[in-house]
Length: 111
Image (cartoon, rainbow, N blue to C red; front, side, top):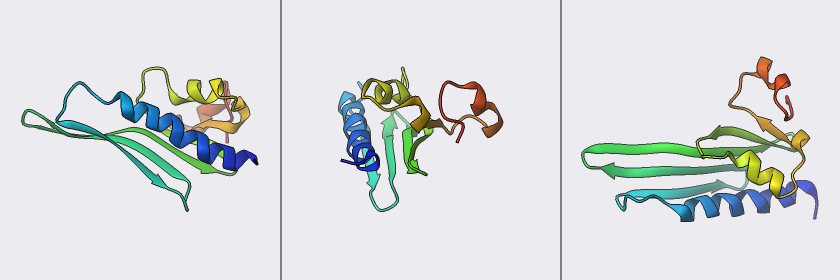
């Protein structure tokens, strides 16, 4: 299996595990959206907490230039940690939520 195909299988698996963790509030739903043709993966929470509307992107990941670009990550330990534990090289992970000029100081790919 080539690298991109492996990533296309791995990312939804990790996000599905996050989705199943759910929330303690039954009025807030975890939803996993996968756009296969464009290699976009999104986990969001939506619903209600009393009279407050909840709609939050928890994780947004996309494949671009044969790397995993983490566009948003509101998880406790970070999806990068799970990707590393699954054998993804640091050089294949871009923390895209950091400004481009600062990515060079992270332990991951700058682009």
